[in-house]
Amino acid sequence: MLTAVGSTAGLLMVAISAWVMPSIQRPTLPFGVRVPAQRATDAAIVEQIRAFRAQVTVSALLGLLVSVVLIATVGTDVDETATALVAAVPMAALLLLVGAFYLRARGTILRVKADDGWYSGVAQRVAVDTSLRTGPERLPWEWAVVAMLTPLVTLAAGIALYPDMPAQVPMRTNGSTVEAWQAKSPWVIVLPVGIQLLTTALLIALLAWSFRSRADLEPSAPKRSAAQHRLFLRRISRAVLVLATCMNAAILFAVVPVWQGRVPGPWATTGLILFSLLGAGYLVVVTVRTGQGGSRIATDRDAAAERPDSAHTDDDRHWRFAGFCYVNRDDPAILVQKRVGVGWTLNLGNPRSIAIVASVLALVAVGAFLAP
Image 1 (cartoon, rainbow, N blue to C red):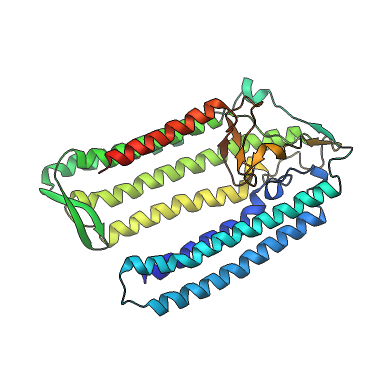
Image 2 (cartoon, rainbow, N blue to C red):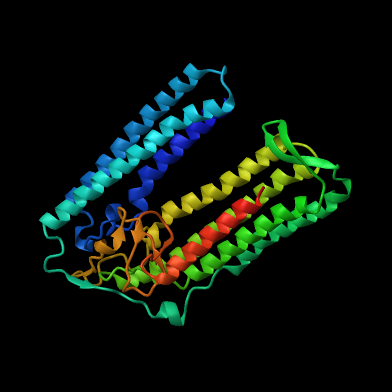
C-alpha cells in the first residue's frame, strides 16, 4: 500500500512540476531560450507550451495506469525492495519523456528564432540597477532566527530525555522494525542537532549571498523588473526559511522516539509528514505565484514596456546542456539566476565556481567516508 502511494505521489510530483514549469519561467526565456520581449507571446512559443503540457498530461495518466498494473501484478509475494523498484519504473520513464518533450519544444523555438530572425534590428542591451548595490534588499533575519531556534529546541529535548535514554536506541528502522541498534551516547543527540544547525546555517549563508548576486533585469522594462526582483528576493527567501524551519521540526519529530528507544509511532510520523508537506507546499505556492526573478508579480509599472525597442542580449551560447549550465569565462559573476526553474546557479566558467564545486564534492566524500 505504501509503495503504491509513494509511486503515485512521485508521478504526480513530476507531472505537476513539469506542467507548471513554463508558467514560472520568465516570458523572455521559454524553455531556456532567450527571446525579445516583443516575441514572448509568439504563436510558436504558445504552441510549444500547449503541446508540452498536453504531452506531459497524457504521459502522466499512462504512467499512473502502468504503475497500478505493475504493482497489482507483482503483488505482495516479493520483498519491499523489489516492489519499490517496480514502482519506480513508471516515474523514471516519465522523467525521461518529460526531458524529451522539453528538448523538442526548446529545439523548435530555437529553430523558429533563427529562421525568422527574432533579433534582427532589435537593440540588444543589458540593464543594471545600481540601487541593488547601494541599497540592497535585507535578508529577513527574523525568519532566519526562527529557523535557527528549531535546532536549539531539538537540543533541549535531547538533553531533557538523555537521563532516561535506554542503553540501546534504534539506529536504522524499516517501518515498525528496528534493523540496527546503537549504544547510548551524547553523539546520538549531537548528530541530528549538528545536521540541523549545519544545513540551516549553510542555507542562510547561501540566501545572504544570493541577495548580492546580479539581477537579471529586462532591458525593455528595467524599472518594473527591478521592482519585481526585490519582491522576488523577499518572498523566495521567506519561503526557503519556512521550509528550513519545517524540515528541522520534522527531524525533531523523527528523533524524539528514537531517544526514547522506540521507532516513530503514528503521532511522530504524522508530525514528520505534515511539517515536511507544509514547508514544501508553501515553497511551491510562493514559487508559482512569484515566478523566476519575480516575473509573475504584478507591479504598478505593468501597463506598458518602458523601452519597447530594447531586448536582453542574446546569450544562449553561454547556457549549455539545454539551458541548465552557465559557462561564461568573460563574466566575473559567480552566482547567476537560473534559466530553468527558480533560484540561482554557478557560473562554471569562473575558476572560483569550479573551486566551490570541488570543495562541496570533497565535503560530501568525507561525509560519506565518516558516516559509517
